[in-house]
Image 1: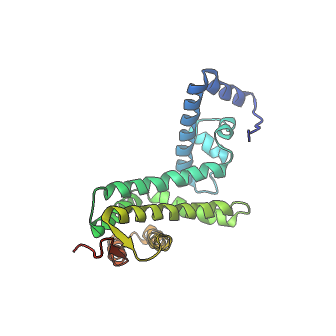
Image 2: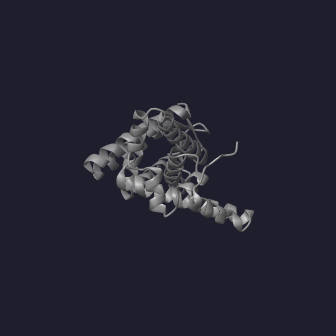
Image 3: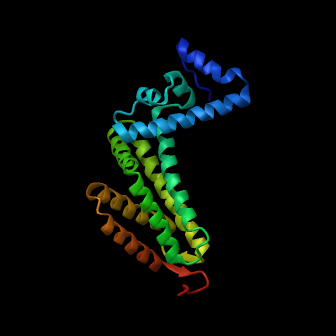
Length: 228
């Protein structure tokens, strides 16, 4: 379904300039503007909080007009979904790369969790924004689906990560992967919130080590027994 958007003169001129040079360049320009808006939204959410992250504050941060925003995204919620996806997928990619080539289960889990935690410590503002976004969405009529989507995405990426680790290390999980993913997400979600409050890094790392040891007990070798 095509979008019908009413633009003022300035907005129309800017949108026209995107398309004037031809379809291929126009698609590139649109993609670049989407990326700039995503980056701007993350900055505003981290700095000012979700409640103050309006379409106007985002375009002001990006140096664009409202017309271009609405040409790139259907709504603020559409943009926020992209923000959540980028942050979450970035953590997962880093965790996968950290344990790439690792064939032993415990080291693979430990490297993955350690990399995740390094990301948490490096970006506390983004972590806080994620919690705030979920709570805000749950309290706003009509936005509840965004919170459900957010945590569904978290669970999906944890499922993918645990499946990937299991396949690479030659183990079979003894509990359903969706249950495993929800367990891991609950641990990391709660641990991150505790750390944001008390910044007890040492204890947090000990919890991660405990989690790795426990996860190891929930796997059996696909060949019949785990390697020592």
